Length: 282
Image 1 (cartoon, rainbow, N blue to C red):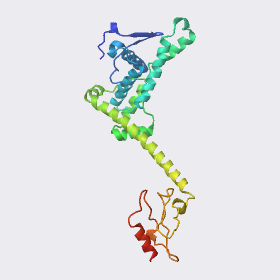
Image 2 (cartoon, rainbow, N blue to C red):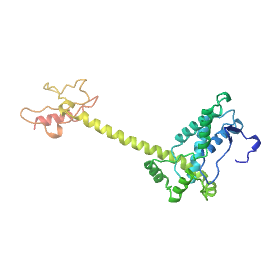
Image 3 (cartoon, rainbow, N blue to C red):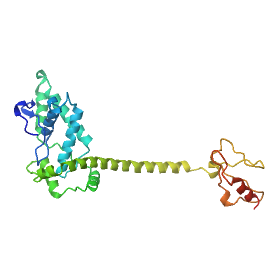
Image 4 (cartoon, rainbow, N blue to C red):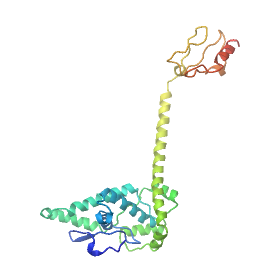
């Protein structure tokens, strides 16, 4: 991937710093902001894309997946792919605005902004997952846990950048497909963890709502009694779904097992009248 002819590479100069298109990241170290910009330059070249033009959204999506895979090879969990994509687009938009500034408008303020961007471009493009709870979940789901050495490596990459991940090449070659599958799994696990959290909240809200709706409602309000006409109960359309039989002989109570016999939507439940008659004759 890095065998591109230097004479045909896209080059853009911002202030005193030159950005040259690149098709990958250096092995054994974590990418800097400049590395990300240079990879975007490569992905947005029509002759590299293999089509008329690749959009910034598509290029950022491809680069976010590649960047996430690069970090995972080093056993470092990242933020979600879509969040990485947003950071890439935001930084590249800033680079594009500065690069496309007309010479007539390149004043002292522009020079200061360009210098700040160039200075920060040598720093780590940090996409590490700082959410401890989410990181613990990802480690639990994936089985990948950070060791003390990897914590030191991350801290070094954020500052002096002297350390090198020695078995990077071997792991990259042997586990490339596995890592890509794990990225998809991690995104799935991240979604599951988020849905689980939202589901528990929804259940809690539903439970509270049911408790409030049940307060102050009596059984008689839920199941209104039938009118007595000396014969079979006359069910109205309004009370068709939820009614109970309260018919009982004078001076006697309806047995407990017959108190909540209800009528279905279209017909009387089998054995309804027999049960009522038995209750009357007790």
